[in-house]
Amino acid sequence: MGRIVVTEFISLDGVVQAPGGEDFKHPNWSFEFDRGEEGEQFKVDETLGAEALLLGRRTYEGFAAAWPQYEGALADKYNGMPKYVVSSTLTDPKWNNTRVLSGGLVEEVIRLQDEVDGDISVAGSIQLVQGLLEHDLVGELHLMTFPVLLGTGRRLFGETPDKSAWKLTESITVGEGVLITILQRAR
Image (cartoon, rainbow, N blue to C red):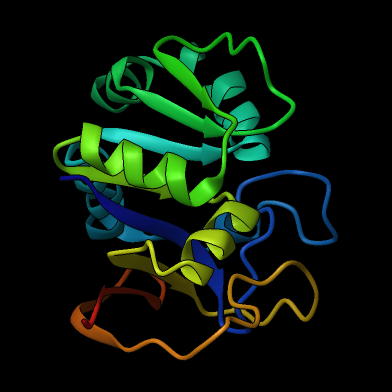
């Protein structure tokens, strides 16, 4: 059975918008900090360990525009792995090995978890992640917290129907004070 693993670059005040681009007051804000060799290796290991990628439409379009141009182990993984995009508007995905999930979020994700054996990585995709959290479908959170308050922007955590408990399983500081935390859903 597949496990949903959310991975986010996040500011101290919870902003996850445009860490590596987009039209935003503070574009590329995460790249203002050196993650160090250990931080870079964490991201590589995380990606190489995933069996599939689940994305919202906007994040999918950004990834699909960027990754096919790159070479190397990480690019090979992203370009070759199964990709699933949650969208009611995307009908003809161009990126290799992509399937559109256009039905109900809960039903589609549960079906995907039954099909995929291993980690299903969800990067960025703010609206999708909020829906997954709301419906208690996330098994693990990987947060790379950057030492900056952005003051504005879309935040990861909004209101949810109820509280949920999480267990911190790992935390390390890398590079220029970037904190990596791994939290598993406590059941």
